Image (cartoon, rainbow, N blue to C red):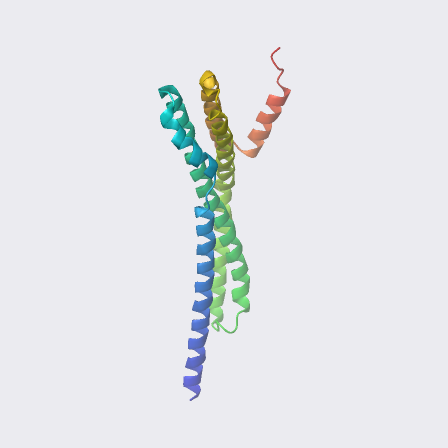
Amino acid sequence: MGQQAAEGRTRKRHFVAWLLALVVIAAVFVIGWQAVSTPRGLGLLHTLPPLLPDLSKDEQRLGQIILDNYLEYRANARNWSAVYFGCLFFSAACAALAGLVIKLEFFLENDALKKDLAAVLAMLAALLITLSTVGGFHQRWWANRLAAAKIERLAYAFMAADRKGNLEAFSLQVQAISYERNEEIVSGDSDRSKATETRKEAPKNP
């Protein structure tokens, strides 16, 4: 009877543990799906594509470039956001679980297993933070999100009635946004600060 009762308690612990794990996984999946599938820039996406067929070839080409760039930057921002905040979330979760596992008495009774599991979780937390920092995930997300906002603003200006006489200016702005995005990705915070200070201190042309 005692052995059957112990086995019953063990099965109950395992069931509760798996149930909690499934709840956490489901919550993470729902949050991630909402973040990925949330629509952004609907006004631009609903307005610019129907306008393009009625424009001249030069205007169509530039308008399509603006639209394609917006979609690219928006997708990049979404993906890097998921990677960056995913690393932060799982790092925090692993760090918290590493301390929690040591204190667990109901789910885990094997001290050696608890110590090994806590060490693995602590290692994962450190690796995720290091990977996020070294990989520059925040910088890539920030640069693409800012570029998407700039190109979206440019797209609304492009849809104005006087765009035909400003095609060259629009083209130059597209090039500038693309260059600035790549500059933000490859340069560090210190490099950006120096570049900003240099631009501020540079004398303006009369």
